[in-house]
Image (cartoon, rainbow, N blue to C red):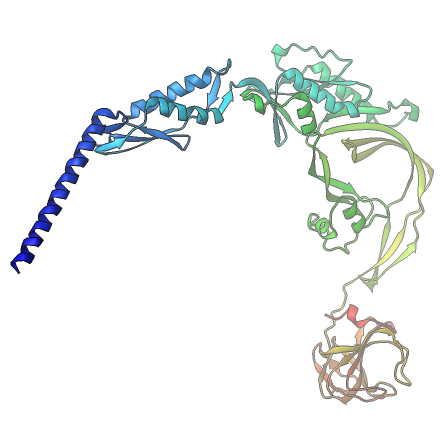
Length: 532
């Protein structure tokens, strides 16, 4: 027992000696490291003393003070600047996160600088260059000089001004308080060297264009066709142009060629289409890249795809055009067939769904002087200045009803077992042309008056079996056949929805059902066109 205690005491003493030796070795290593390893530093416990440095969100090292981080950044920028003869603009987002430590491994300034240089290189930009920002409607681009801007604008006009009658300048925009320029289009015959210091549109330029335009639309009385000056009359840009001086990095300034290609790009714009004789909604929609539903949606005056349109109606459509479009007016001579306006005659004894062509249209022929406005190559509007009719047009005359359609309800609800019109292999004795519809319902089903009126027939009739006729006025009659029981009498006044009979299988019938007809002025019509 004493021997075991003695052995255990020796073991504990050996363990304590090992711990003491380990602590001594650790202290010795730390002391030597602090004396001979410069990157491993001992800090005084004086608050935050250990700084993690981040540049543009990337960690670049650890320093022992915040000022050293700023010095490293300045040194790194100087190294980047020395690689380019031009002034550089570099994104530099320096962040320092501090903490308090007793011992820590810090980086040398040189190591931090070496890590900063490649990061700065990725964010460097050359010095901002003087340029001119051109705003065209909603689009913006930058060009090197006003000469490039003027050259661009003149080039855009060229396809529409083949005789080189007009020229574009830049002038001060007097409607703006800032130093903004805008475009001015002048006739080349005018003095385009206006004093730029006046910062205003020369009166001569305005008067020349207005004079030419008003000459074109001067009343045609006493003027002959040969008196008109044909060709280009006015020209302008379709979008407002604003030009301002700016400073931009070189990689954001467009060359002349790139700018020209950019402004010539197509975008979808709203436009107006004038309906001509023979147009249909589906044709107009397809012509402008729209579905029929889209065309109806953007035109509130169209209720649905079956809405009526007439020559001269104006519909909203979309059309592809250039970012910088050109609007110009041409005075043109041509001969054309034309149609007179359709004449509509009201017939108060017809329903609104009835219309008949009383007189067919026949085109006339005339010669015309007209001012036609274009946007790029697309016609927009036309004003006839002078016309001479060579053959009169005959107008189309359409007679149309004005009475609202009556409302019919289903006399019974069920599957339609036989529709209106021609049918194959009917039951012996039945007509091959079905003048109503058959509604399959069990015998004894209630039959309702489809519309209010007076009962004119209530009894047995060959073929129909038990049948009821109701007169609704204006030549309208409904018939209900193959009934099992009649609940009204001749001469009785009934209201819409009132029960008048029970369905059955009487007369020339192949099974229980209700035969239902609508007749107008003695002629059977398809009930499905009238039932609600």
